[in-house]
Amino acid sequence: MEGLGLVDGKFVGLDEYVVPIEDRGHLFGDGVYEAVVVWGSKPFMVVEHMERMFNSAALIRMDLPYTLEELIKFHLQLIEKTGFEEALIYSQFTRGVAPRKHPFPLEVKPRLSMTIRPWVRLDSNLKINGAKAVLLPDERWLKCNIKSLNLLGNVLAKQTATENGCFEAILHRDGYVTEGSSSNVFVVKDSVIYTAPTSNKILAGITRGVILKLAQENNLILKEETFSPDFLLAADEVFLTGTTTEIMPIVSVNNQAIGDGRVGTISKILHEVYMNIIARECHLLP
Ligand code: PDD
Image (cartoon, rainbow, N blue to C red; front, side, top):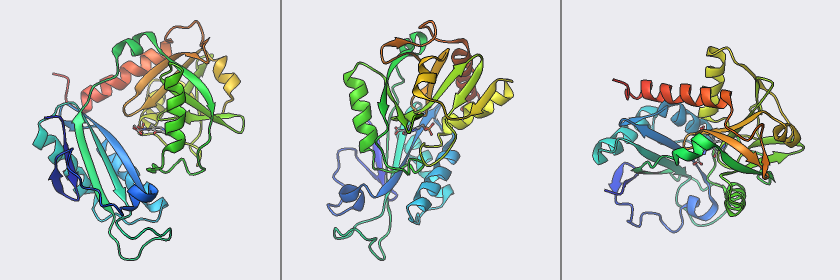
């Protein structure tokens, strides 16, 4: 099976036409989303992801018609129905279906659609040897803390990165690095880890949150502080975090080597500890 969809509680094939032409997600990108990785048939950090979905929805003044428990149940149903052990579950709410007018329509119900697909992990060579990134101006709107369906700024940045043979675009605004087009950014300088503080300019990544905790537990010094693109270029290590990105070491930015151009020690340690957490939480360990 290549995957399965779930629309407002009903299973659908991935090739079925299920989006009404006047769905506001389709017309305006008026909605929010989440992506959860499944390991060992367990949705990793699904509670945190669904809590963030409620938060994003509240920030665009949308009341979700399901409870946290129901959303978790939908994840489990998709896993059970497909039998996938490693998968990616994508879910999104749109504000609903109504004739195209900008103001919120009255009495429409937000629509939930979800998909599950087998999860193909990133090429392990990238993790071992490190990936490349490019610095680009952050041209997105000023509510990047909302996991909104509107991703044009992110898509355009990622496309430029891809066309330059890079894994990620690292964005900067007002002289400071914000985040990647689909990841959070960390740098290491003189054994201190830095990442941009949470604000309206970045998404408070779930993986980012895990790294903050892991740094504390492993006695690593981590500062949530802004830093400039020049500081990043002069760093000893750079790495990215994200649900699908996991912990990705970056060894070259703008074709300039970071540190000695090899994957750094702290990036390696955090990657290892992070993968151990997944293994433990998803019962992959014997
Ligand atoms: N992206 N910043 C942005 C802009 C993101 O899109 C993402 C995740 C992150 C990392 O967040 P988390 O650790 O919660 O995955 C940061 C998802 C996976 C995506 O759009 O596919």
